[in-house]
Image (cartoon, rainbow over all chains, first blue to last red; front, side, top):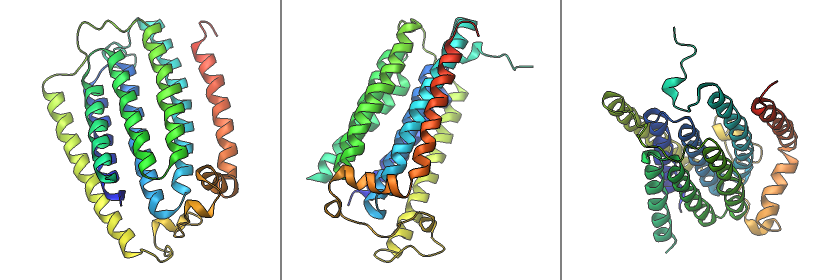
Amino acid sequence: MLLGPSLILSAILFTIGVVGVMIRRNAIVLFMCVELMLNAVNLSFVAFSTARGFGGQVMVFFVMTVAAAEAAVGLAIILAIFRHTKSVDLKNINLLQG
Amino acid sequence: MTEIVFYLLAFMAVLSALLCITQKNPVPSALWLVSTMFALAAIYVLLNAQFIAAMQVLVYAGAVMVLFLFVIMLLNLGKADTSDLKRGPVFLVATLLGAGLLTALLVVRHTSLAGLAAKAGGPAGAGSPFAVLPGAGQVQSLESFNNAVGALARPMFEIYLVPFEITSILLLAAAVGAVVLAKRKL
């Protein structure tokens, strides 16, 4: 039964993603950390689907759809920001700073 | 045997994820993330979710990561000379917050596994968080469906048909939005 170990792995990967978002300043690497978090959640969905039926795998399907849409729109936003500031470093993106 | 393979793949996934968030150049960072996703796809096969494993390789490791690498190379970010890792107190605070989050997640795992074990075999009770899911509590085997794809298609096109149709609107909005945002002049 791999449900327990899978949930531990999912928790570790999600934490790595969150720490990555906090310690990096490159906007694209930040996006990759968000993808890592989505993957960790997918793993726990699949793990629970071994115990509770196939609804979890349908949820993984929806998460993948949302992740693909998010990557397309997010990278378009990064492209627009890069055109404006000539950088993807978050310390240069301070338009709302007082 | 399955456990040994699982732990090897889990080690590979965690190591690749750690390397992904510590590389200073975004290109190797993206490639380590692909390695994590391949390890997760193999774990999905061990968890008896073969169709999801194929989708993981095709959609995540294929399409999404190619999009990331394409943007990195389009913006010419592949020659990072200085690391963008935050130093000093921010790093320390991030590590502490990460440790706290990991502890909280493991506590949640413990309680939810205990809840699952208490209701093992029986249908989900009214107070259970699983009760909102239609068909919860009855685990059918893959053999009762035609195959791995049939097992996923039945709930998707019967119970989750409306959410499935709504994702098509989401994808249309995302495609239109990406084109509008990436245009040089509106």
